[in-house]
Image (cartoon, rainbow, N blue to C red; front, side, top):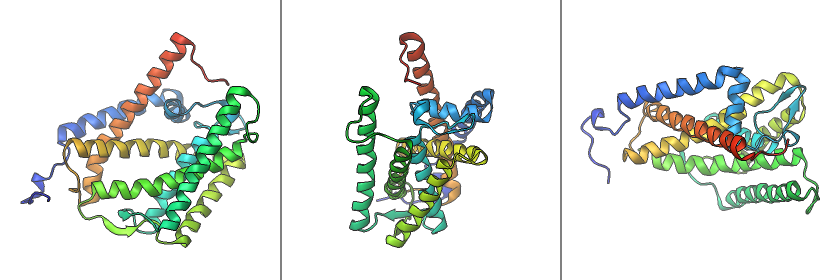
Length: 273
């Protein structure tokens, strides 16, 4: 049972010194990433979480997406899921959808894993295993995975974070799932169009998707450290947890970037171009 609250001062929110330190860390991380311009900042996010193999990445003229085709699909799909939760006015929804939709989402994850294994075997052998991998297939299965992850992650996050989460599911019915998949299909067409004016919006959304998921994971870490499960009531509370979560994401990305750069310099551990 939750302790009684006699005032907001007793709520286990991140202290001001932590908010200040987190803000400085986020600002420093952004400043370092911007040394090579906005695209350099996006590529620094991708460098931490994606192989960035050029032949497996969408290229718009001379501009290379910061994430490979599969990762681009994953994080665009996740952002589509989060955005649609707000469109449906269910961003705090805490229940899973019906069994049929759950099975469908699980099949999305299975398709992503199956295509990933087939693609990885092709990378190692340069011979088709079951079928020849293709960037469009990577993009599609990545999108399906991102949609599924967002629909699984949101209810879990809301159950842990909010004091009074919305008891409804994010996906109420098949119509909602169809609408979400329609948004995903639009994003797939946008990426696969190779139309240069769409490059920066798509690159930004996919990079933000990766950063947002890491930040939300950081929010959950902070909630557990402060023993603040089921305490937050307002979006202001959420923002106070989000800033340390963003600092967590910055530290994780910077650490992974440094580790990868060290591995490449010291051991020649490079992915093929």
